[in-house]
Image 1 (spheres, helix red, strand yellow):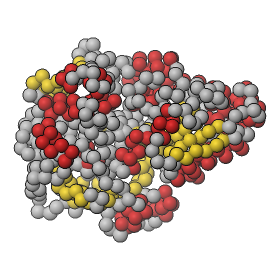
Image 2 (tube, rainbow, N blue to C red):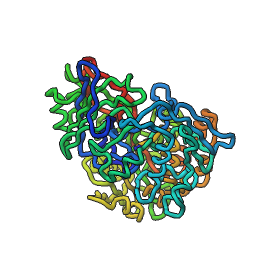
Image 3 (tube, rainbow, N blue to C red):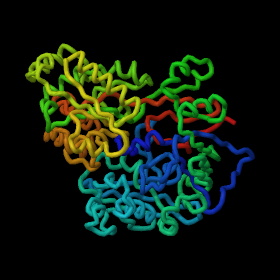
Image 4 (cartoon, helix red, strand yellow):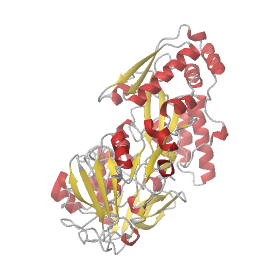
Length: 538
């Protein structure tokens, strides 16, 4: 997700409750129980494209198509999904997956390794123009194929037998297996090529996952039903999921309280009321989310080209006040980049990062040659315009002015082009975010802050290039000892946010939602929902 966030992923995260499901193409699955077990949920917008190779993975596609492996948040382990087992070569560059046998698509055809081969190829096919193609660039020839310089057949993903898939990567990567939890799904080539852009429409769609899409009325309603051909259909307890398009969070909250929805996010303005309510309080859940909110510092233009200025701005920022008084949703002030629950997360007790300390901030600025802010050029702070980003920027503006005497100019960017403005160096400081595609520090440290990330993130071209940081990230990528990897990521975080203050983490997002007592849902940090793990008490 993945998701996974980055400005490119905002629509996925906040429009996320997408639906996935399986059923026989052109028909509605039969429910075998005497009573249909169903739930009703909101979507804050029509999902648009739900093709798992042509768009970011949302809830809908993620519940209809099966990746090679899945992530178990209870054990923090990668577990089998489409692949029942796997092995890696001695040099760490060839992965071999055994695909599940006796598993059918919703149209009755067998799922084979060819479905995965096609799924991977379709993602990097330049004609697909997939926004997630970069996530496969560690695979042999993926970047060249995506650029149109090599044929699709050159991609290092091949079905070497009906139920054996081989993936060759450019360099050993301990995070590679985890990355496959949210990219590289089995996709039916014949169906996708027969119907083109309409292949995921009800009646056309052929799936291999827990649910199938049986109804889709644009900007109104979608319905997913249980797919009896799913390999673990017997364990799926939900028969039907109705998704209602409800653009306003306040409207969804009212519908929940009126009994029209089984679960919904709680708007910030309702949090205090919900927490204290005798009925809603016990139905409320607050927990971590794999999403980071951060500010970047332009390294090539004054005054943020000066490390002491960057440290001063970071030390003058009261992150706890931001989460307590502005976001007010259980967000966690962040000293480092990697969210809690991820491999490589640095516990706050390690003391990594630049804490809020006005006296130290003033000292940094004086050492930079700007005592009391005297002589410091105005700092341009940019953000993609919405209410919460504006409120945070205004608070930071006041902190830097009051604590350091710094003049801060704000620029709320309306509409498109924000990423381009960031890349062009329009701001000294800019707002960004990142949703984890998989729970490993490499996904944030390697994909944003390494000097040559696969992601093409708008930030990396103007962030500071730090060779020792790059070296640690590359070494951690091939380290098999978990304890040593964690130590390396801790050192990398220190270099990034403390020694060089190249960027400033502000907070990690939180989940705030209510769920009816009849519904049992896993509480996990991921923003993609695994509806096949839900159940109802009816």
